[in-house]
Image (cartoon, rainbow, N blue to C red; front, side, top):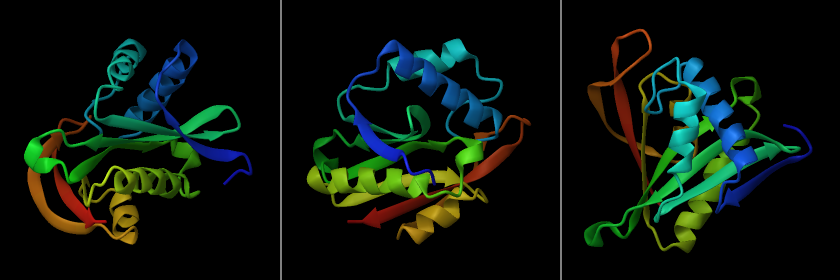
Length: 169
């Protein structure tokens, strides 16, 4: 991990940041990440996605090495009255060449700390069965709640299971 790595919450997205985030999501989707998009993801579609992210209840962090965004995560605060105790971790992504350097762990720590500050006592997330992210989430204390077969289509056209996780905080 580089000496200049830092994690910051974003509350607005300027044009430069939108371009960087668009590049990141295109790169991780092309690398096989199961985050709601199929390759090839156009830069225009990627940018459009990010333009709509900062809606009420969605918090966004980026990991930067120097001035370059190398990872991101979202915390989606449940908005329903009967769900005000929980939040969902979403769109955890780290540039492929920057993985296994502790970046995802730092992003998750920031999201979890904020969830506690927002008086959330339950975190949930899902991830592709067999993906390396399963090991990360388990190491962070997330418990497997179950699996859903044929949950997400991949770039190769096949359907893959997702693993649901939760963590009481």
